[in-house]
Amino acid sequence: MTNFTTIFFDLDDTLYPRDSGLWDAIGDRIDEFIHLRLHIPREDIPELRHKLFEQYGTTMRGLAAIYGVDQQEYMDFVHDLPLRDFITPNPSIREMLKKIPLQKVIFTNADSHHARRVLEVLNLLDLFGSIIDINDIDPYCKPMPGAYPLALKKSGEVDPGRCIMIDDRVSNLVTASQMGMYTIWIGREELPADVHTMIENIDGLGKILDTLNICTV
Image (cartoon, rainbow, N blue to C red; front, top):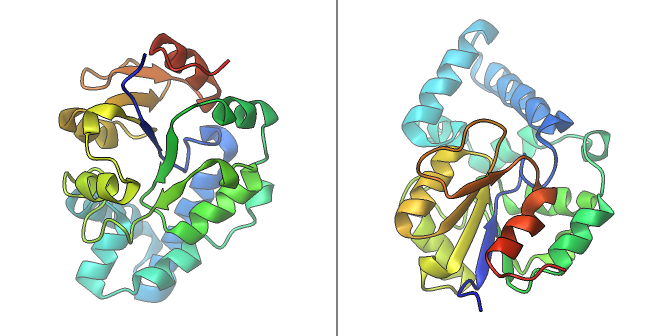
């Protein structure tokens, strides 16, 4: 029998294909927000975003700390996209997720409104017991170590060793692994040393869980 009780799922570029174009579109909206709201020349924005991400974990947290940007205003703007132009439901993924006999939780650096919209389009909203968003882990964000105990507490889980975390960002998984979680990377390159295993897309999750004696068939 498995000792796992909870799976934390990242949202963007994890529950839908990374080549959907949605994350690129969100990135374009981030650039547009910075240009319109802060009047920063477009050519300076990539370097600024990189610095904010490295220092604060997310562009949003950096903009709020340095420029006093309202975080909800930012979220509403950058996620204002026609999601169905980018992502569509996948019935086989829904069936696979339905068969996982563990608590399933969304753990995202986005806000819950965006998460619900994405899950509704993917026809997966009803399969997740809760959504842990950027507001729930304030003042932290993934991959900051302070974010993870808050996520555990909100999920009702007390032991990270009973948790699995799935994410497309290695840095988020490294922190989870250091805390004792089992980590699964959505990636296509060489498996990083600090991550347990990898799959190219979420539809490969069932086979990984079967190796952990978590029945999905």
